[in-house]
Image (cartoon, rainbow, N blue to C red):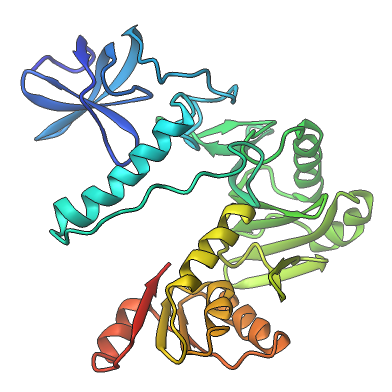
Length: 354
């Protein structure tokens, strides 16, 4: 095997679950991101493990006809996306293959996997994005973790979230700089759509922002309907911090602090597909139920439904959704694995793992 940093040439033979191209060098597997099977590429080794190595792409010597230009200026530097260089049809094929391999090759289940459902939109579809922020040396960075894991890549747009958003990021930078009273701070930032406006959720392990300033400044940022500031287990909120969502006749409130599927149009189809498997009067267990969207839809089949979820905010919202929509559903806050171990003899007709 060549030494680290040596330049190599190889043909990409496969695609890993993380969308990294797989080639071999002297019989040893090498993962090379941003490549496509059947491409001939040059790369250099960046790290060595006992049975495999990682490489960084230098050039594509023979392109696949499935290669397309990425739509993001930060692609390959930002660690948020891994497949923008691959045509969407091929992306769908590989997602199906990964599920087939997980079920049939790894677990020997011999399951027939249906084709992957395509999204109506491949860009500007996301309900929310999760970013990182850090301020040091008087410079504030907001963005995703770099693809090489070496810090944060500062962004002023994210095509999978919004089409025209540079003004939004300018305002987010300004807001966080205004509310901070420390020279060094870091944390996570969730931006969630609320109709044509946004909810900001700022999360940090240490207090760095002035709550009084947040309360005063939010009126100067009308594009933010609400701000959540979470430090450890302490949560403070200003304004409207939940967004409304309707599916069929059911009304839901979505919080940045609780998990929800990120593609509104496709998730509606997903929930509909899940409900189609349910027969009347069945005893159903909905694992990782989140805020209860799938659980409520399933309950319309008149079955006895139990939802299990570990997140406290999610379970609170799930119970509220059941109450507001007139549904009788049992929601349990518990670790899913522990719940299953403690309830081994329940005769469920259907178990959904979402």
